[in-house]
Length: 211
Image 1 (cartoon, one colour):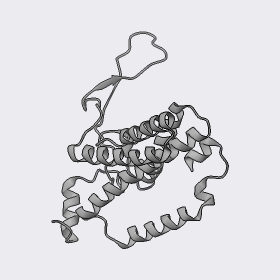
Image 2: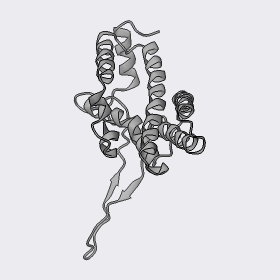
Image 3: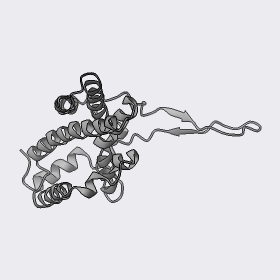
Image 4: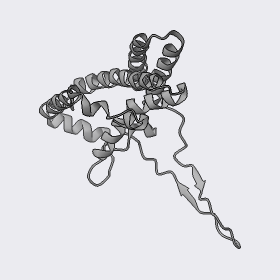
């Protein structure tokens, strides 16, 4: 929906194609009925997530190119299509969106899939091939980045950044803001406290889900 609104290409497909609603409702019922906190469920959801990312990144890029957009904004809309829904989801469940960094690669994986789609579609005019390669690339790169915890460079936890001032009359002490070391993508409690690995493992043991 975000992509279609930005492209101004008529009503969003999600509102005109009933298949989207059926898929969303069925998935919601399954997620509500099945306890997905077990490790096998986490691994399965990880694979499904990156397969879907590859498909959505390619879909957004191809649709943008077909409407005449330049390859650069087409890639940007491909990434938006792939991760935009996840950002809204994380905000709705009181989580810092994973694309803000501090965790294994996510938006970068979507960028690779969208860039590959723009390249293959632009040079060879093979959108179906481009989508297949995007799914494969996002799946392999996403799973590897999660397994090996590949991350983009981040600022040191103790870095102190001077606060900018518009006016500087007389002598004033420098004001600094310290990085609080938050971890994007981490689930939070109602008191906005990060749920650590020990708490998650204790929950799994109480449900009999630990291996």
